[in-house]
Length: 517
Image 1 (cartoon, rainbow, N blue to C red):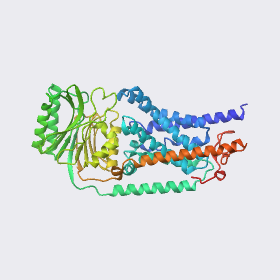
Image 2: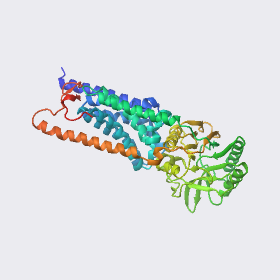
Image 3: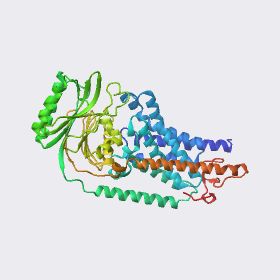
Image 4: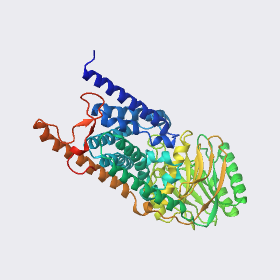
């Protein structure tokens, strides 16, 4: 017959396995390249429910295992399509399991000490702060965030205009943390329920205000064009001449239908000083003749170096302006082109800012464009087929953060036009139709946002809260030491609802010293 300890270990193992498997399955469906937005809110819930009922090795092991399984859908994408260098690949794959372990571990400690409000706050604070710190520490910027899973839910993403993407992550991880804390045995629930309700009501009020605001009235029609699936033809090749001819016909047709701006994808031509006039001449003449601003993405080679540029040909015949892509994909791009260091650029005489593909993964660069006068960003881009939805929604969220319209020409991906509230007003799949043309109206007036003015205040607030909550947890641990040495349980250590004999569960709140927050 099994001993009580053996039965306890068996029950703990089963609970940990169920929690890890449930969290992993939800994460597999609720994150990745094609997430189911509603499931993302449930991903942390199984391990958060199990954590106070398990000893810490079981709880944290289940958490790590669940997140490793959840992101398995991205392994091949990172390694083969993005061609991440090994060091970056390992760091990215380890990030979410370690972040989840930190969040769940702090949640467990605070909850078992009778502090449910602090425990529920710890999870979203650690998560949002962790995502932000990763975004400024690694070369992919804010690429890795749970916030993008919600890009299709406009009421949810409005909070990004106040807090940045980090506020969306806070909501997505905070709701399951509150549910898990309320479901824990023998904890005070009233304060937590009131605090969570007030926060959700404030969020709903802000969202309603944002969505009810009248959009600027001035409108202009923008054409967004698809591009070739593979390679960058040179302008003097047969493929290059055919592509340029196709683009001139499509732009002329769009202009005849009322378009006043045309955006071509990233790197559609590979040029040198000798071949560049073969592209620039026809596009400049077309822009002037059809009264349309034209933006084209190209590789510009000069003197043994190459840059990834977006070049605008103004409708009034003014000289073209060029913007060089600042942020390159390590491995995939850095072996071919050099990052740009030039100034921000706008189409002369307009509020149309120029930006290229991965630059949209960096909120500070988008915010700088907004604060330098842009109200619309014209973005040549290049997706990798399967990531078109996700990468285009990163651009959508940048528009919400800084109050911008985004016209994004995603070669081998998505063509999108989105407004400052995150509404995708027009979209086409250029993976299936490389020659697609999308035409939509955008507003040229400004839509101010707090985030554009203040920046990442909320992320730093979350970081400060995480540090403060860690200090609370460590202080409680020190206070428990003398009680143990005196041969008695520390206050709050008598637990109920455990997974078995000898397995601690949640604290009895009435035994806890101090406020239960």
